[in-house]
Structures are given as C-alpha cells and as structure tokens.
Amino acid sequence: MNADPHEIQKFSELAHRWWDPTSEFRPLHEINPLRLEWINARAPLRGKKVIDIGCGGGILAESMARKGADVTGIDLSEKALKVADLHSLESEVSVRYKHIAAEEMAAQEPGQYDVVTCMEMLEHVPDPSSIVRAAAALVKPGGLVFFSTLNRNPKAYLFAVVGAEYLLRMLPKGTHDYAKFITPAELSQFVREAGMHVDAFKGLSYNPLTKIYALNQDTDVNYMVACSRPL
Ligand code: SAH
Image (tube, protein in one colour):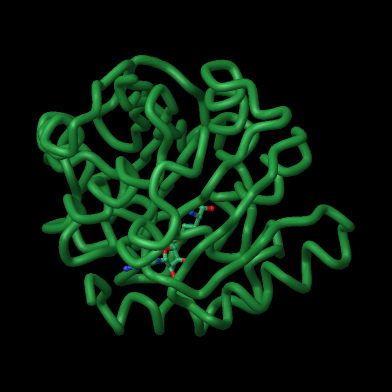
C-alpha cells in the first residue's frame, strides 16, 4: 500500500488534539480560511460532490461542507477519522468519513466527484504521483483538483523544518521530512502524467514576525495548485 505506517502513527498519536486551535494543528486551523476561499473562488462549493484525500480530523472537509458541498473525507488514520466523525456530530455538519486508501477509492468510485482536494498530505506518502493519479481518476471530466504541499529548496528547509519545528516550535520535531518535499515542477509533471491540466499556483506564506499567513504568488515554501481534468 502507498502509505508510510510511521506517518499514519504520527498523526494518530496527535489526533485527539486535532480541533484544538492552539495545538500542533494550529497551522492547519490558521491556513484553512485562506485555502477554503481559494478553492471556493475557483470551484464554488455549494451543491458540489467533493472528496478530501488525507482529510485527517476534518478541518478542511467540514469547512467545505459548511459551504454547502456534499463532502467525503478519506484517510488512513482511524484515530483521525474518529475525531473527525465526533466533531462533525458535535458541529452538526455532515461529512461522510471513510478509512480507505485514495487508490482503492479511485477504483471504487471513478469519475464521481466534481472537486477533489488533497492538502498537506503528498509530502507524507511514499509515492505522491500515485495519489495524484488517484485524484485524477476520482474527479469527473471537467472537474477540478486541488493539492497543497511544501516546496523543496533551501528556503523551504529553513522555514518549514528549522523555523517551524526548531525555532518557533509550531510543529513537533520530525513532522516534515525535507527529502519528501515536492517542487512545483515535479508536481506539475505528476499532474500532466495523470492526464490533467495545471491551471494555477498559489503561494501560502507565513510571516514569523506578524505570525500571519497570507495567499500570494510566493510558492517558495507552502503552495497550492489547482488542476482540471479535461472534458
Ligand atoms: N488534509 C488535512 C490533514 C493534513 S495532515 C488538512 O490539511 O487539514 C496529513 C494527513 O494525511 C493525516 O491525516 C494523515 O493521516 C494523512 N495521510 C498520511 N499518509 C496517508 C496516506 N498514504 N493515505 C491517506 N492519508 C494519509
């Protein structure tokens, strides 16, 4: 299976704190409104059938459901999915959560989704290109796919590993493995090889002085890409 058991375990151990906005998951809480708005601007979510690959505790999945989408969230951490389920019960926002690999879901429900999202997950899997192919298989012809990940260059190492894990201690040490970061060129190639178009890139940068995230054209560290499956 295209999954690293240590990665899944790492997220499972922290899962009970997923919805605590001051926890290890704080960065996900802080970037969520920004990525949600970008997705919703390119693919208005109301009434759309959406699948979120690597949904974790459901921060993005639930927020897309709040926008009126019919959302399925999949992940391989059972603990994270349990937390996601409990949270959706509490907040009364319905999301369907499933413990299943993206590749298997793609075989079961090909071409069923208007929108596919896969955020902050590709840098945790052994073969990210296989996840990109699964996303391309899950989306309907004409549908949109969104990925986010970490770029690989000295600045990304400095910000995402040294800064976030060692200096600012925003993330536990060992959260990110620099060797698994993915450049926009590599991700573009995976997207094209999966038969999709690259529509747009968006940078998501963190200012350590103001402690504020912002969307911009700076894809040096955190970035997102919007792709489309041709009709
Ligand atoms: N996408 C969510 C969570 C990101 S954390 C968000 O951005 O808010 C990364 C998630 O990827 C974790 O929940 C982890 O369990 C999941 N993950 C890691 N490897 C995976 C794999 N091979 N298949 C499915 N999920 C995986």
